[in-house]
Image 1 (tube, one colour):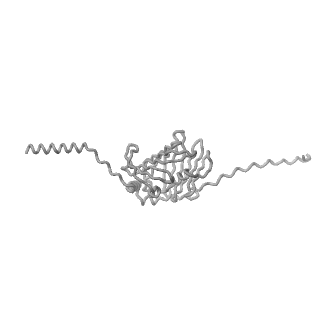
Image 2: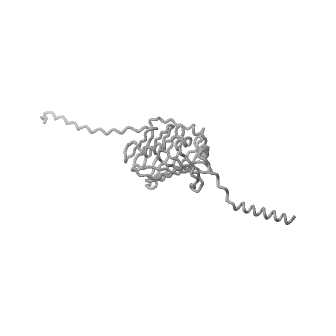
Image 3: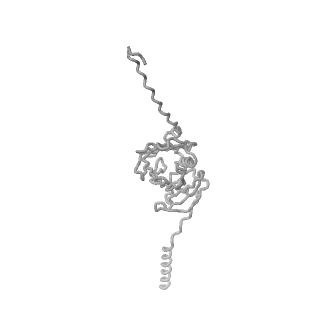
Length: 268
């Protein structure tokens, strides 16, 4: 009996050691629908997201490489409408809008202009409202491309194409939240590159998780957006998103009136 008991103990110990040394099985790769469902649930659920029809946010826009910053405001509305204004010290006011059909921009350097081509497509993509509920419509070829690390944590990667631009989205495997986006972009001078955006600091607003820190690294510059406040379902007139009329040129100064000759002085 003692020999049998010792043998059993030896076998059990060996099995335990083997189990400890065997690497844990990798989690099964989820489907696109499972990643999206986890994301929507993490944000607060479909019903909570659908209750939001407008979003107003404000905070600070920073360009670290140039050491400048300024306040920003952003208005978003169902129907894929967006308007943002940024005041940058030493440069002036930058405005960008999309009214559901037309994308436009206005800044002290380039002036007021319509966006076309890739720039317009990028503006349209940025304007999608409640996009977590529409991802398979926005990206018809959406597919899972394995996993990757974002800030040291595992994330599932989805890749899709919209308007000819390929985008990769990284979703934290534990929280389900979107934590990074990589997208192909075209700059105003026509060059192409990749924009990498980190989405962080989620906080609940009306039952929906909103990111309060957004960090972007693009082909021309990097910037940070820090939202101080986010408000849903405020009234926003559609005129807010429309391209403004060009400013009328200042009228030419009127010629100075010719003074009347003094009494008794012959006119010339």
